[in-house]
Length: 110
Length: 115
Image (cartoon, rainbow over all chains, first blue to last red; front, side, top):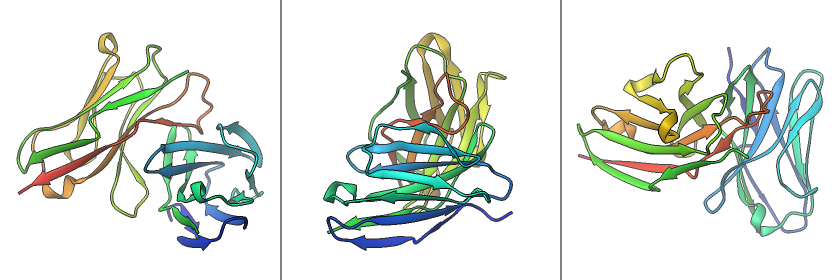
């Protein structure tokens, strides 16, 4: 089976812009989770979608949002980008308790 | 709320030496405990997972971890380090009310292996 794919792999934006990141889970996986990884804060949970519904949410401002489509693909959106949003954004799909991670999208905000 | 502490942000060992990476979780026993490895510019790869079936868990690449409830620990070990083990390692727990999709990670430990 193909693994979790994330597009794009690298992205450069400027402050105030918005960005959309995409994640395609492993076939058959209905849960998709998103994490932000930064050197200062480490790995932090953003949210999880299961069958097109947000099931869990982390402690991030409303500028961070997501959605899941009927084919389980997920997108996350960050509006009004800030410098501090520069990070590696990881997506993981799961079947049961095990999560499978994608390679991440490296977002740089200038 | 569950939390995870990894003692030591950097650990350096010589090739062939024992690898010991420390992880402590908060007092309540989580449903699952995990160790993940991350190589540069890559996502996370699962090394092993504790599910209460056995306290000693064997993972990939020769790693294993022992769950000790009395010490609230889940330390990762490997008898003999290889150069290819150099990476960042993360301990993670699932919250008690988890339905599968949320992990709480430690801050990570970067492992260096000297020739």
